Image (tube, rainbow, N blue to C red; front, side, top):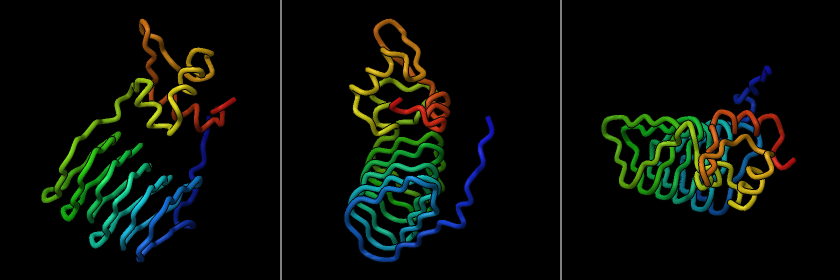
Length: 168
């Protein structure tokens, strides 16, 4: 199965303002925040939090680069990079993590593993636990049952989501 990568250069959003609320992107973008943001961020593509930025939010994204201050929960599906000027307070859930010398992380780190349990998958897909369990029990989602528990290979889940089979 071949996928074409969308050109992210065509969809760049540079925010240098004070904003509050929820931002959610269905398509991949290059989002850069240079000001103050409070709320929730759900991005696809690249999210950069500039060195002067102050973000008080729960963040979910693919590739996240932090240069400023973030307080909240960060879930990075591909990579989380903390630059030397970064100050992060809260829980982080990265698939891959790069912390530069000088960066400050005050909180907890839970690496996204190759296999996720139902709670982790619920957070990863931003779906309620009941839907995950229903799909696993009916065979609608790629899953492996071990005893009474389900486990989900992250790569298989990513392919399943990309195929558009979610919710069918």
